[in-house]
Length: 125
Image (cartoon, rainbow, N blue to C red; front, side, top):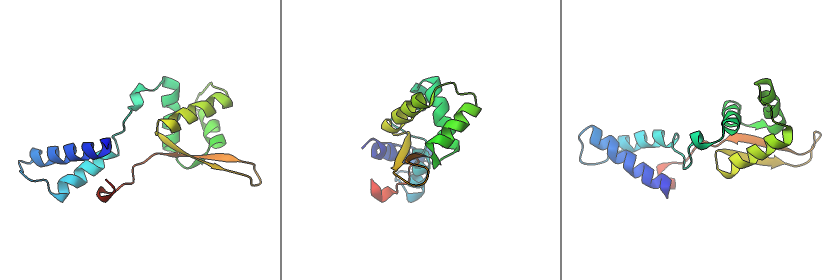
């Protein structure tokens, strides 16, 4: 619902900025581009360490959690693997990232971490 309201407001603002009385599809397209930056919770509200992990996940989307942890430690992260997993879980609950658990295989079970990008169209709202 919030995303829909945000789209309506931004579309109206885009139309108003060019002195139009009606919202045109171009205005909606501008609002859809801005929707990617919009989230219910702001990443600035996160702890520094969690924001650092989110930045790594954003740069390396669709990566295994172990690979992300290695990048995290190389970049100067100091948390243990279990703490890293908990912070990933918090980010997933807050819908900043998407997690997909993959069972079995030669390497055992793993989790794929993807940055939560908004792929919705106007008709989805």
